[in-house]
Image 1 (cartoon, protein in one colour):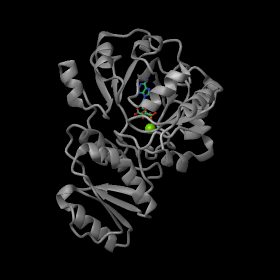
Image 2 (tube, protein in one colour):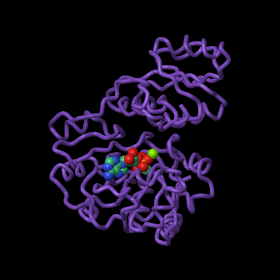
Image 3 (cartoon, protein in one colour):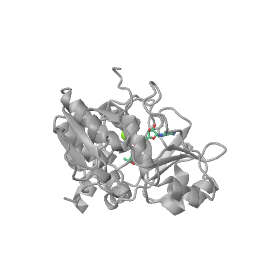
Image 4 (tube, protein in one colour):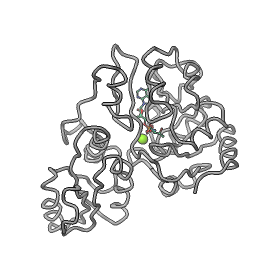
Length: 325
Ligand code: TXA
Ligand code: MG
């Protein structure tokens, strides 16, 4: 069910009044507040249970208004904005005065993006200002990709939920930091590294993602309730069956190469062969296995090209040590 014009007007009114609106973007649902209202932004942190030092992304409707939110717009920012906005790219720049300190977690930089979703753009245009929004989930858990996920997780803590159907990309935006000597990818996401490199005409620094389960390196984030373990693709079935025999309720992310293989496990998700379909489904699959009562999820990493880089990054984080470890 897609939001109507009157839903959008109502949501814009809620933002103006200092309330919180969950809204669809092409990546995941966001939990939005007026970026210029410190009290509203403080409530976002409270509802999410997120430390206030973790900055939020400011969402705007019009790329030409980027200059309102940052100290200056460097040529690289202009180039990337022109090429990828509206779309799943977030740019980190030196902050302008307009954005509240609460939204940037006290940092001197600000993250800005123009989302590529008609409902998000309609909301931002109707509201007129910037909307500070993290993903609409509790801190550390899996991002929501449907309005139903938001309602299940945040319920009455949100003043209004705009429904725009399931998110098309399914993983969060790519974050590129433009405040250093060279652009740096802080989080792989919906815009691929390959597309960014082609636009920039040079290779990009991306944080090392090759180490698996090094304690303290990949604190758990984007995590379902069930534990996630990562194994080689050809070992997924054997490891899952072993864990099931040992008494776990095992959920399996079955790689496409093994489609149709019988697996003695509690629940099996047959992964789609296309990485864009995998990205779109990823968080829903994790939620589904939680809902089906799995306590362990056995998965493998996809090839780290295109959207596979973002999927692998989220799986590693989901498999990272939990706060209680
Ligand atoms: O696709 C997305 O980016 C979604 C949708 C709703 O737009 N938003 C999202 O927000 O994923 P969130 O808050 O869950 O993740 C934003 C990330 C956080 O890890 C935060 O630390 C980082 O962006 N971030 C925000 N501002 C930053 C800044 N000034 N410098 C470095 N990192 C920043
Ligand atoms: Mg998030």
